[in-house]
Length: 554
Image (cartoon, rainbow, N blue to C red; front, side, top):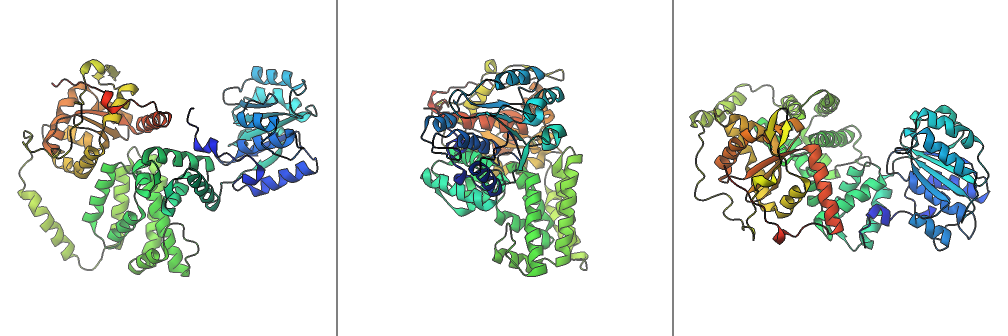
């Protein structure tokens, strides 16, 4: 039997199981009890907050054999609605059926009676995608439908719907589901699935979901596919390129102490690990907001991120005025992200601003002396040269795969990138590479990736080093290295034939190994990881021992 996603498996089957939206549940239940059934409803709100689920629950309550308002989930009507096979409950996707002809076809069918239940329920999802002509065609029918017809329109953007349509519907605004309700549902799912977990991991999933119950369960599904029968924080941080709260507190502490070197080293590590910089910026803002709340009120009831002890420690080392200044700097940075092509330099400037803000102002000579001392070893260093890989490789301690994992040029398809010929790895080949990858190799690349910076000024391999430094390791094995670049243009540049040798020379010089190197953009990386996860859930991934990839050198 095919795997069923958690958000579908644990979709509420009665009004009482709905998480949040209690004002809507109560209103609809009362309307059903008093038989005040509207002919058209509009469910509006953010994605994943239960609009379609509520529409199906309403359809069940209208057609249950035990009476209007009931949801027995045992009669043929309830079971058919649960399975999506009820002939009188029609779910229409307005994104793909948004034209006048589709709506006229719907109107033609409205006049016919029901087949199995009391009411025909038309659920039109993403109704704001309909054209103006389609809206106008629906207008009269929506205003005066037959008594056995109920329309439920669902949308995330109600402002795009014609006012004449809005005025003919009972409107219900769905709000984001509270963190408490999402946590309760996740706990219920984990216990039902016999998964071990800790509260910190649940809190992180809730933060990522941002008020969407479906998003929360989808994230949980993805993490469990990665981690197995145990839910822990480290796996979530690893999958979504996030930093722990402890790491963010340590960063703020270094900023407060004016330790520029440590701050920049941490930033290099974030870039190498592929950390989500925008989210990190927002997380730092939330931490400082908690600190400011404590500094101004001495209250801990309103904290969203910090524990009481963490807030007290930070409040001791950060001046209230500086806390507010750092918050303003971070808020300005979040606004400016949309105006820059690369966010990393902007984030670096932001950290330097905050560090300078907190650095001591009186002793000027000591910081200069520190910089001079730090610069001396660099001045004595010899100019980097490309050397042959040493006999003892950084990877010698790792276990070799059972079968040699290499790539043949015959499996690489040429593509045209602005007139340049380059490598192109198909999805099938990429999945094979991901299956044969090893976490130990990836971790070793991540640990020493910042060493590539030493070669950015080298006359022969400097450009290649810069390309790699602006990317980070995604998948790695003994003969293959897949990197992720923020921009597609950079990925295309890395994948050009003429750049492969220089890129391999950089990796050979730094790591003592000469793999085939290929780059994907951030968007492509997200897509490929989803393809991999889907295949993993369906059990259709190829077996590692059955894969033999061949690679020819220069």
